[in-house]
Length: 216
Image (cartoon, rainbow, N blue to C red; front, side, top):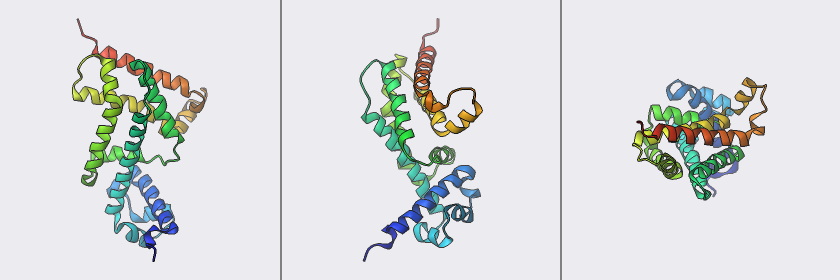
């Protein structure tokens, strides 16, 4: 007899719960979120939560782990398709690939909200994923930033540069609709991607080199 939890209907219900929980946990956090809010948004029942996750805390753990897995996979994909060239050219390739991978995915937008909350209040069950994420970011950006800086960077300074580049990209990925409404006198983001990619690259290279230039 087939495992009931793995049949199509059950998997769809589980997916609805994870997406709904991701949105609500991302908005209000674990403590403030209620099972009733989650099941209402998912269009499921309390019994479905009990069946698939046992309780709210196990559901939260699975949401956090999925958020990490998706972001980790994104950086690994980028690393696998990096191209040759000057450090500036390679950073431009990184930014372009980052946009391409994230914008082609049919993914919900709650993962970054979940990760932001988890980094403030770490979830012990996601420690392995946090280490994997750190390694994935460093492997895809660390050497490149060092080449641009042309000096040995302290770990904290490297972190600031990495998160600055990623943050610029994520703003346009996750807030594209908001940005287009706020700046309706400009062309939509989707029509300006090449200019945005080149701006993020040029801005980041200038900032890294400027901050790492020896002072007289």
